[in-house]
Length: 193
Length: 193
Image (cartoon, rainbow over all chains, first blue to last red):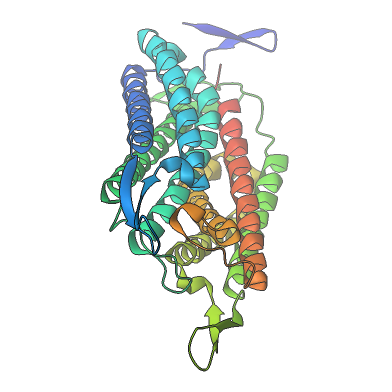
């Protein structure tokens, strides 16, 4: 019978069910890679969404070229920064998670440390998705009460980029939420009744 | 010696340190009540932020009264809905947490169930804070690239309400994050090494 050392005396082992974390560790790895992929996709789609259009003006030369870029909006700059950070975090933790797949017994140890950072990154990423989504919605529909005109009738390609980027980032937030829920459930299961 | 029943045979107790969850349970109650209070405050401040101003127009009668209300912006409507839901959730869990303070041994059981919903509510609340913050920032600074003019020079009182509401909601999100981190740490500590 296995024995454990607690507070200096040898006592019987807790006899918990043996940790079968192989499946959970692989799930963790897959979700973290999905999160990484969606963060990278969201940032690339957002950054490449530059569009130039000729805008009519009331004086000569009557047409002027105007760009639409993500860095014209503070909310979209925050989005790119936040999702980049989340992507970097996802990349690092994917590598860590890969090593845990090779040694599944350390899965719980990993999870108990990472889940706290996962929660922080979720907060940052959800806020960024909300901010970019709010700006994108004003761009799409405008707001007649304060005369903010919609811009998506002119910058259609740019708006498609923003919309896709926000959608992918929302998907990433859902993946991260799922990851946290799975981690917490794994922790809860290991607690003796 | 206490004994536990695992998989049909009587075995020695795990001999974990006895659960001293009194302090954690009180902390949980206090944080949940703080979350509830900040959600209620955020919603009330946002909803009461109505302001009427006389706006000049180029034709008679040259001045017209225009309102600024939160329900003129879809992002602010989402904010009120999301923070109300978070407040309702906080109210219910504060009551549950109060009963756990009376019986601290059930703290871990409560935490392992609630932390999953806490994470979902955090996602909703962070996204709402981000969305309202993005709209508030456009209202404050405008955006010259797309000619969205700022409105806070006219609707100063309304803007103060929005800004305060977003700040309080951000505080609530931080409280909720803290609550999740404390819960996860409490779970991790109860796992046998």
